[in-house]
Amino acid sequence: MQSKLLLRLRALLILAMLLVWAVSEAHAERVKDLASLQGVRPNQLIGYGLVVGLDGTGDQTTQTPFTVQSLVTMLGQLGVNLPPGTSLQLKNVAAVAVTAELPAFARPGQRLDVVVASIGNAKSLRGGSLMLTSLKGVDGQVYALAQGNLVIGGAGASAGGAKAQINQLSAGRISGGATVERAVPTRVAINGLLHLELHDTDYGTSRRMQEAINAHFKDKIATSIDGRVIDVRVPDQEDERVSFIAELEDVPLSPAQGAARVVVNARSGAVVMNQNVMLEPCAVAQGSLSVTINTDPSVSQPNALSNGETRDTSKSTIEIKQEGGALQIVKGAASLNEVVKALNALGATPGDLISILEALRAAGALHANLEII
Image 1 (cartoon, rainbow, N blue to C red):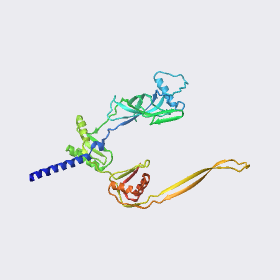
Image 2 (cartoon, rainbow, N blue to C red):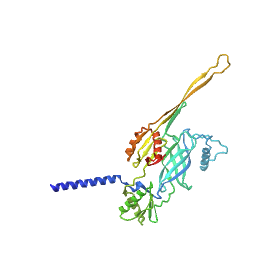
Image 3 (cartoon, one colour):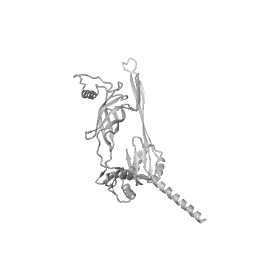
Image 4 (spheres, helix red, strand yellow):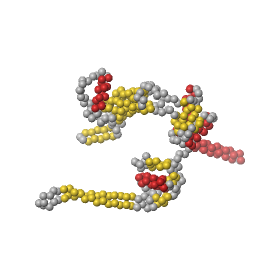
């Protein structure tokens, strides 16, 4: 009987340990989720080109002379020389800016997606084709060539003075519309060291990442330089570095809790706070001031035979009303759920909530960094 009880207790203990391990693994993140490799980054490309084949929705040449100049230059390069003084009235051509992102380790021949946007007064780029365009980097070198048919996500129609439009018609994409012509050299490891950069500076997470890497590889290969950079010693053999980095990026760890922060979007009124926000007991009063202006139109009619003129006049009345907000006690809260309940108890709108949070932060009752975007 005792042996069966011991077996059941052992089974329950093993099950509890497995549950704890599963929960800890579920909350753990990987190195690749928290940090990136220094030097492994994309590069932005930009170019200027022409979109042709539009259905009368191109640039108005009198207002965008650069479109005509670009077309004349392109025709000259193709062997078509226009007589001097020729005035082109184009309707099916639009000048555009072409942008793309060159990813790390891109090689010649790789295809890239490009974004095409009108820089003139074209009404729509629907149905257009981008002519061969050079895409340059910040150093002025050509890294890709773009060409192809545009895909526009919007739609529109107009007739009889009425117009309807959905989404944007003056910008579109070309999937795989650019071909890489030049590679950007990328060095992952310098002098045998790989530099990991945390997405957010945090000394606690930097220390935990160092400990997790050293424990996983059973060697002291990682060193925290500061709250953002961790140096990792990589194998000397080039063919071993790919598998080493792949294993390194999958190392699990639990990041340190970030600083208490409240983010407020002043345009939309959205308020987001993390779980470390704390609120001290305080009293809050939120009043409102309203100004109402009423205008009554009237007509001034002169007396008969007075040679006066009839005029339209208006009479305005202004009313100012202030509603005093009752002083309310906000209890101290030690968790995010309690903070939300305490602030919701005030019955404030998102706009009022922004003002309340700023006042709480200034009074020292809100223990969090307040960030307004």
